[in-house]
Amino acid sequence: MQEEKIIVIGAGLAGLVAAIELEKAGFNPVIIEADDRIGGRVKTDKVNGFLLDHGFQVLLTAYPEAAKYLDYEKLDLQYFNPGALVLNREDAYRISDPLRQPSRIIEMMFSQVGSFSDKLKIFKWTRALKATTVEQIFKKKETTALQFLKKKGFTNVMIQQFFQPFFGGIFLENELNTSSRMLEFVFKMFGEGYAALPAKGMGAIPEMLAAQLSTTEIMLNQKVEKIGLKSVELENGKRIAADAVIIATNPEKLVPQLKGQFEDWQSVLNLYFESDITPIDEALIGLVPDEGMLINNFCVMNKTAENYAPAGKYLLSISVNDTQGKDDAAVQQEVIRELKELVPELAQAEIRHLKSYLINKALPKIDDYQYSMKPSNSKIQEGLYLAGDYLLNGSINAAMLSGRLAAHAVYEDIKGRGFKS
Ligand SMILES: Cc1cc2nc3c(=O)[nH]c(=O)nc-3n(C[C@H](O)[C@H](O)[C@H](O)COP(=O)(O)OP(=O)(O)OC[C@H]3O[C@@H](n4cnc5c(N)ncnc54)[C@H](O)[C@@H]3O)c2cc1C
Image 1 (tube, helix red, strand yellow):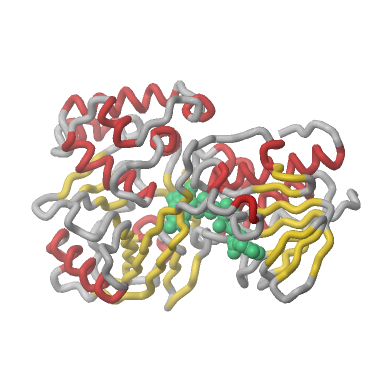
Image 2: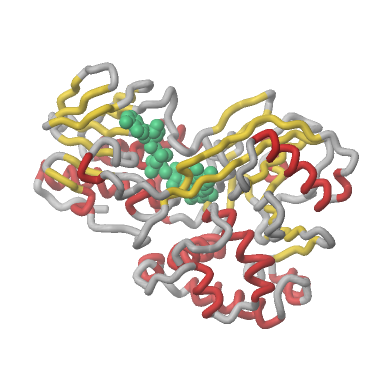
């Protein structure tokens, strides 16, 4: 057992993985978490028998780092069907995944979204990505996702009808200004695994990480206010000594020298409704390319994971990237109107609002997206280390990876030995 005291600030995925790795190295870390529960941005509420994730999120099973820390079988993962349903005012079309659902190639080739050559390009691109490692993707020259797609020669129709709503829902911005590296990384992950939800909600992911901790103390409802010399100071004035501190959250407020460095984030408004009729009869994500509409994407959660709603009800999750200045009540009315326009079968449905989540700091905007980094780059000064998705890229994978790297940096400094990753 190591005697040094290590404090981890934040019980999000990065902080939890850092603690797992510190325990493996023999430390008994202390996690200090401001909230009343663990999980950070990955949490699930229970409301009237429905499971509501804090923002629509999915676990991509191909994430290399997630596969290291999560037991997918125990999480009882429930899978989305590959592809998506594109809904316009006049029509709805299905985009399939040609590599995993060969029987759907014909349907896809002749579906109305995009041209025949677009579909061949998707097919070739998916295959090329199979032969490219995630590390190679993040070494490529960076452009915006939109510039990348245009350079690849995709038609405007394909970009507007599929890529913009699909990746807009992932990047939480409609213009596809996010990095081409992120576009290729996410597209590769979708091509090589599945998008899934744990049967008990996304909150089961941090719960599973926490269950791997045995000697770590987790202090909830304790906000770190300041970092001192070999210590942290809590909001209530209490000072806790530490040999090393890992800040597993945006460090701007805690480290004055970093002020302004991580201030740009994408926000999203996620609304949940219960309905007695389902707009989609499959485990598919619905995309809304119409720029005049508020809805970016939606999905019937219990078509993928049945636990998300009580029997006989449907749980609709709707994501709005840009509220166009409207307040929550106005957005609620508008998205129901849009949904009924897009899916005429819903005309008589009773759709009741359950809860909305406005997440202002949902995904970090990063200048130079990275897959990984040297553990030593986590260190910002003697005894002080950083972890969190904002260091690499906004994803569950990056959050976990950053936690592991920070823990390894601490270990290497304290023990002066290399660490096997
Ligand atoms: C709406 C939405 C959709 C997303 N969709 C996906 C997706 O589909 N797939 C995907 O891979 N990723 C997705 N993500 C991203 C993913 O959720 C994050 O990358 C990841 O959860 C970040 O984890 P983290 O540990 O780095 O940070 P956080 O989860 O932000 O954890 C930081 C923790 O630190 C705590 N904290 C902060 N300040 C203090 C303090 N002073 N003292 C003590 N504690 C403090 C916070 O309370 C929090 O618990 C999405 C995120 C959102 C919000």
